[in-house]
Length: 349
Ligand code: FA5
Image (cartoon, rainbow, N blue to C red; front, side, top):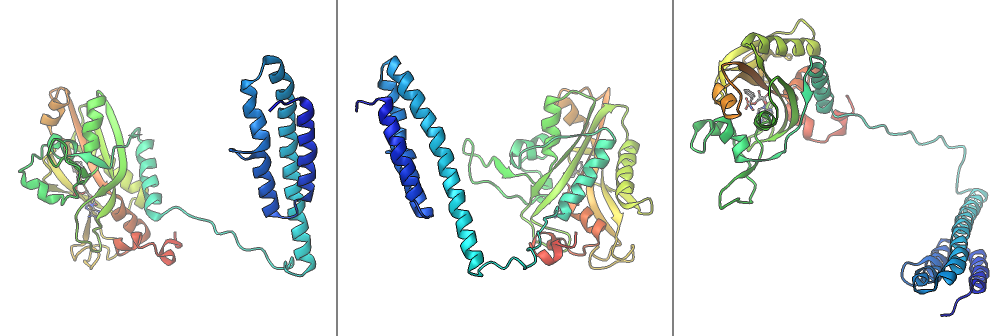
């Protein structure tokens, strides 16, 4: 094709005439394909053909074609607006649009109560100098169990009924949906030297029979502090500070001896049941207390494995269940309500 700027001029005339003739959305679309279509568009072809031309031609034809492109795009937008305005006018005249109707209300979304609770907890911890870090939800057996002193045959694995990922590594079952946020303790200590002060929010998964306080997917916040001179008193003080900030100074918490292979000593953090004020009901399984999390002093063997001198440093750790805290905060008697996607429930928050 032997092209001159005059040819571009002729194309301009044709294109503008065709645009004026386009009377509806379908014709507009067809016009756009004819001139701008990526494969056979007429203007596209001219612009694409420039590469094969001499420098002089490229300059003269290129400048004309690019100017035309800008002009046609603007003309196309103007024609489209014109057609739309005409369509609205016709609809108004025909009575199809009732401008006296009240506008439809805006539906505003809100944060899920578990997210709200999570944010309040993170705010409490960050105000005390903790940083927020995250870890992967699909985790290696090594981080979820092995490095936390839970080897393959250890009975403590029974506490975490596990969802394995069907993707063996070296023929081994090595990947799983993490059962808790504790693997992030190891990942952090691998990368950071003390002093460490982190919180790790995230989902955890268990092969669980659900009930009022158990779901198969839940949210946890892991807490880890490693420094010189940290004791169980710092752990209790920190957790109490956070709980009081969330629930007011009236609520009680207690630490009860418990066992987790990665802490020594270990404890269960419990709070008096919001539903029965400690008298015993279905929500707290008649005990008056609801378990909020596990906690304890980081096992010295883990510190040493991470290259941290356990004679100099100590650490405390905790893992809190956020749904349980959200139940307390908002007076929700059954955890399963959170994930049934029932708007009548969710709109209340
Ligand atoms: C753990 O997951 C330990 N990683 C906690 C820990 C961290 C101990 C650091 C020591 C040091 P546990 O399985 O008890 O522990 O779970 C911790 C909390 O998560 C529970 O107290 C509870 O609040 C919540 N939780 C556990 N399982 C479920 C579940 N199925 N549904 C909802 N929340 C759950």
